[in-house]
Image 1 (cartoon, helix red, strand yellow):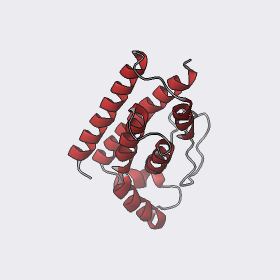
Image 2 (image 1 turned 180 degrees about the vertical axis):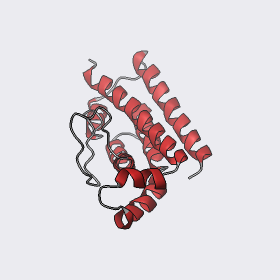
Image 3 (image 1 turned 135 degrees about the horizontal axis):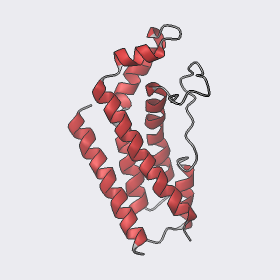
Length: 167
């Protein structure tokens, strides 16, 4: 995965998101019931859950506890298919299907590295040493890209949530 391709795709998502917000806020786009259903079907309007791969549970009182990189990255890669499925019943033209499709393509930018590292994880992680494994195997660029995709997906989630509560 090249950082130029990833950066260009992230910029596309941000443009699509900005355009959708402007169209909606200025009344040039009225969100339909089908679009609200699509927003709900993304699963982004509820708290994220990270159940794969299973990791040791940290102390619930740990203020720094967060999902592992692999859990976050696997969720984002899986989200690509979910976003495409949510957009499928919608007309192909329109701000929401374009936004969901662009975000799915952004999530797919992580796929090759996630597949490679997930396979490595399956055979390579010493018991209880997943944090050290991630530090040794996940490049700084990949960490930054994953964080960037995650932030962009969270922005999408907030927008979808606002679509659902608007009249």
